[in-house]
Length: 37
Image 1 (cartoon, rainbow, N blue to C red):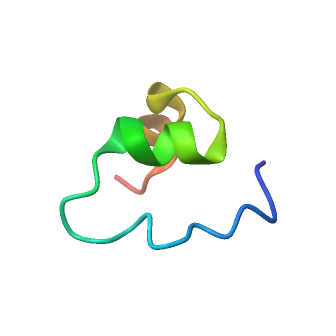
Image 2: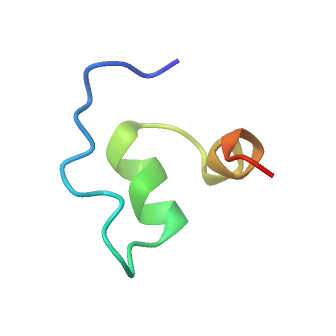
């Protein structure tokens, strides 16, 4: 998994999934698959 990327406020309200994924270097679908149901 991605470590040491330090989010940098990625979880702020209004942040899009694609923006967060791009920031940490993964595909947006990986975030959708990872998040708790």
